[in-house]
Length: 142
Image (tube, rainbow, N blue to C red):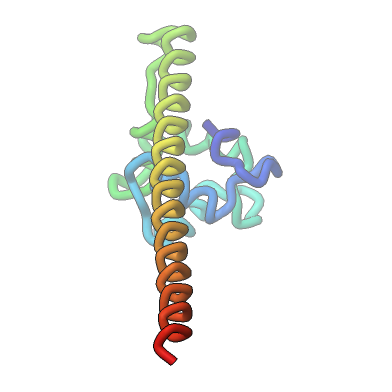
């Protein structure tokens, strides 16, 4: 999951990547809330989450060390799977299903964007045809 949201491929999840992650998981946070989430586990005070710090979220959630209204607790609950119950294969399937769902959502967003772009292009063509018609019309009315 960490790699899925590390869009910069720099080994860290920064504020904007965390924002996107929380939105895609259906739990958007305020800018201040996102900063507090990072601050809560940011061991090296660099303002972003390393993989180790990301894993710390789940450790703190399991140990009951996160506030009930914490965005990190929400993140942990949305990504939660008990490997002792589900087994490694169950956990693998769980995370693969999450990636598949996120990929499907991205495809859907891309389709919507393509439709919007097509509508804009058609509108521009209509404007261009109207302008050409007016120009042609003015040539005949003179």
